[in-house]
Image (cartoon, rainbow, N blue to C red; front, side, top):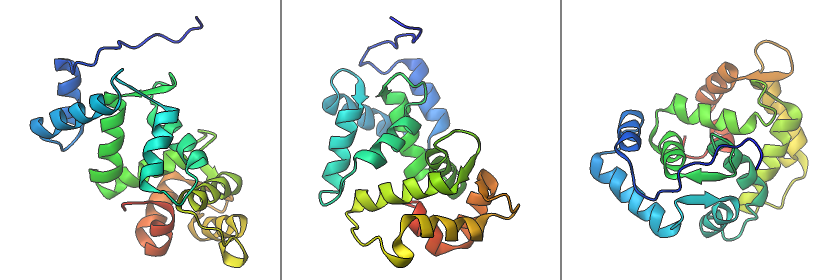
Length: 190
């Protein structure tokens, strides 16, 4: 029960959904239909749950442990927070993270790192995300400059223009654009 409104469980792509995806992605009609066919093939219910999401990431990162990273990513992509990702949420996330402009991709990354959803990334949040990314790619060396807490402190020290020991979305985007090393470390496909 609860107060979550059930989504329609249709596996058909409605005209309204198609129009929304067409307006909010750079995908052609054909590409949207191909993405939809693949999504339904992999998720016959029309829903991608967290377990399946992790399975997909394991295919891309076979030597890593994607569970923690996937929790943060899944929570970001599950826009209505109902515990599953439907095709609309899926394609909007794919578009924003892979084919959107750099500011859009950095904005999505910021949203994932902002675990508390307060509009800022603090050192604890950044440290958790760096550790999750290390797990994802199977990086075991976490000593010295690779220590997630030290790396987070260094990044915040560099990007925090306002001096409040947090990174705002504007600071994150500007800092990642200005520093290729930080951008590569924090944002895949940017």
